[in-house]
Image 1 (spheres, rainbow, N blue to C red):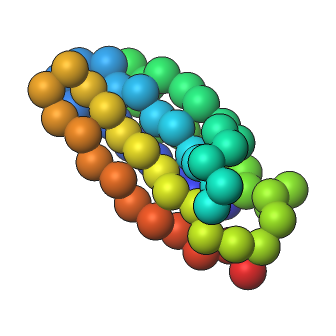
Image 2: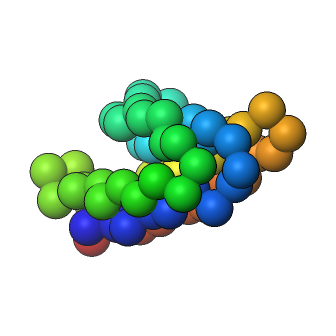
Length: 65
């Protein structure tokens, strides 16, 4: 499980992408929203979380084992 909070003052787009570029999950978070992302069903591997707003972009790699 991954807990995510949108700390930005605007809507945030969240995308989880696997090593092959396949989108595994996509969501939009309102300001101050919390999201619990259940990754138990995903295969073992490296994934990239991409957070985007109109003014910022941030990526974070996670390892599922």
